[in-house]
Amino acid sequence: MAAKDYYKILGVSKSASPEEIKKAYRKLALKYHPDRHEGDKAAEERFKEISEAYAVLSNPEKRKQYDSFGAEGFHSRFSQEDIFRGFDFGSIFRDFGFGGGGRAESLFSQIFRGAMGGAGTHYQSRAGGPGFEGAFGGFQGRGRGIRGQDLVYELPLTLEEVAGAPQKLITYHLDGKQEQVSVKIPAGISSGKKLRLPGKGQPGFQGGPPGDLYVQIRVVAHPVFERQGDDLYMTREIKFSEAALGTTIQVPTIDGKTLQLKVPPGTQNNAKLRMKSYGLPRFGGNGRGDAYVRIKVAVPRKLTKKQKALIRELAEAGL
Image (cartoon, rainbow, N blue to C red; front, side):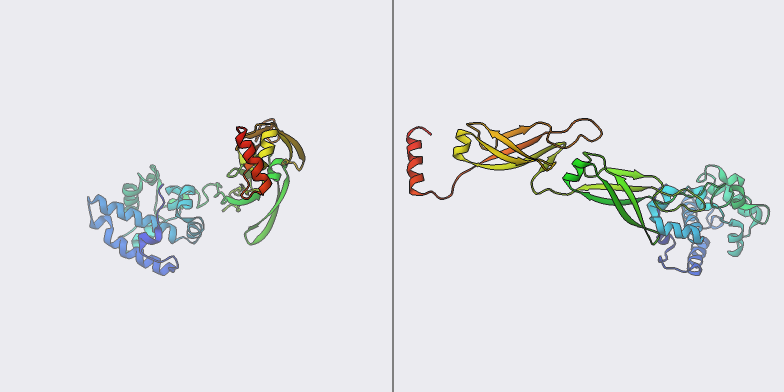
């Protein structure tokens, strides 16, 4: 079912009183009622639309849920059967001067049967039987209830936490109360992933089950490492002489260690040196990614007289 703005359909504000809503519906119902537009399909569709809006906004519980979930959330949870459950057409039509009883039942069957998947054939006005509410067992529908709304909690993590798979205690608000829950973070998880905690969302309505809590991961930027999948990259600067002759440099790991990395002679600017299995754990799998050190060869901005003389000698020697 497409999301519909019921307030806009009836031409009232979200703060409208029940009397204002009824008055707006009465005006539109009189204008588009099928008895005044026999054979006019456009008027019939408009009458169905305003009746659907009134069925929700005239019922305090349904209106509360519509306001809570929003149009899209409401229509993803409620069928038209749910919407018209408890809506007494006979009473409404009598109030508006169109009569009730069999005429209301007939109109319901003709106009709403298609929208309700045939349910209109079971309708009876309250004057002649249990009515639509009785036919379907009340708004909650035979003990079915309405499932509570899901919640989303954004959890920032450092790369160190991604590598270490910590147990995190998160605090969130639920119905005005503060709730806490412990979450085990899978190693190697990435930004955008969601962890589902069943039953930790909003309570259900009319005996329905609670919603779920989704913990959405956001991995924050790291001052040293850049993540690419399961691999980690860092940049280290060395001197020209070290690049030409080779050297050994110290590099950190995501696990807090410090390694001695050999830079071979003749290393070029932007070269990548691989440290196997020093990346992040593979999410949902075995092993780890790799760590890479990008080498940046530093070019001095200023030289001493001695350095200039030596570089000239190198240039004369073909370097």
